[in-house]
Image 1 (cartoon, rainbow, N blue to C red):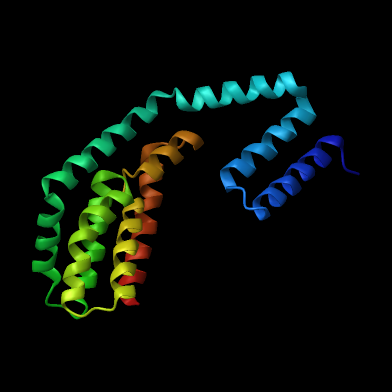
Image 2: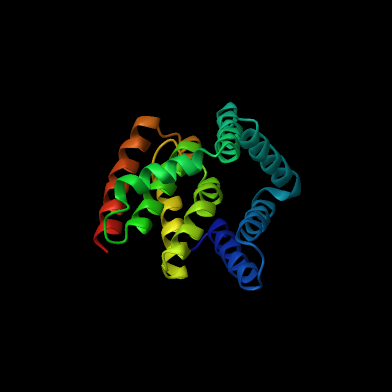
Length: 196
């Protein structure tokens, strides 16, 4: 037999799916369904108290101070042209292989994303160089864009990425455990990208 709290939880899940199917962004649908569940369980005052405390404690954490520094580093590397140097060196090493420009783009984007901790910075810096280069050598546009996107997202698996920083803070995992698991995922992903 289901308790009242179970029915409230089930209702919150149904509300989430209704909002998501209506086109509300996932984050807002989750927030609305969570707050609705809190209102039914704790009342309006309890929901306001829990929501404000939780949001403030997440935003005011000192651990988030590292993220603006990564954004600054990404901006400096993008503006100084280091992305061009990185792409050129990867092309020198890997350009002679079949599909060498795609491999170069994947490696350069992954390294750039790992250094800056943000995949979008790698897409801007390396993609601006790699895309015209691959177009010049008559690579398919979908292949070129796919290699840039794949490399940039592989950078998320190389610590210290912003994803792992936030994940480690939210779950309370140590950096060593997160790094160990991410390195195993990285080896598997790189192997799959290299064999396909």
